[in-house]
Amino acid sequence: KNQVEQSPQSLIILEGKNCTLQCNYTVSPFSNLRWYKQDTGRGPVSLTIMTFSENTKSNGRYTATLDADTKQSSLHITASQLSDSASYICVVSEYGNNRLAFGKGNQVVVIP
Amino acid sequence: DVKVTQSSRYLVKRTGEKVFLECVQDMDHENMFWYRQDPGLGLRLIYFSYDVKMKEKGDIPEGYSVSREKKERFSLILESASTNQTSMYLCASSTPGQSEAFFGQGTRLTVV
Image (cartoon, rainbow over all chains, first blue to last red; front, side, top):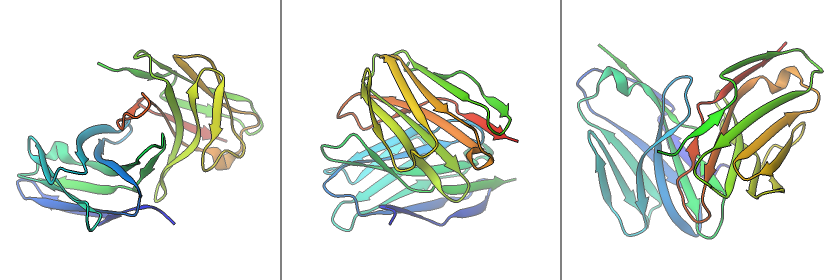
């Protein structure tokens, strides 16, 4: 069973609108959670990292939240731009383990 | 900036051929990983290495082998390529305990 579940699988939004992506995980013990952005045909690039004690972190128009109690994270994109069209992947690290647990990604398409 | 370089962006090989995918990182990272990424399945770990000449199987090692003779280089080998190995292959590196994996640009392999 996948330890990281993301929703929605895909969404289409109008340029300038906001959207929120969800990530639920079961990884334990938890170390941290990262959101990656992957443009088509490219490798993933890290957007934010959330540790156990952090609730919210922003990177420009991207804001990530973490609720370590319910094991949920979200990524909010504000005032979307065409360049935000990409796959957003939630990645969770297990404490003391080199391996990473990947979600299958949220495919976002921004249309003019 | 960390740089992870994969030798080819696109590759077309025939069934039964031996295929080498090369990955080089310039940040002296101990950990290196090979993933494949398929639509609807997300990133799946094939093999990883935590030191020179050390390797561990990931979730889908069948049909693949790896080589790590030098710290900066991690090679993925398909001994006899098959059409079900057509995929996007991503290499990544990280330091132990560091959650961020730095990815290469990916190699789109097509086996015909």
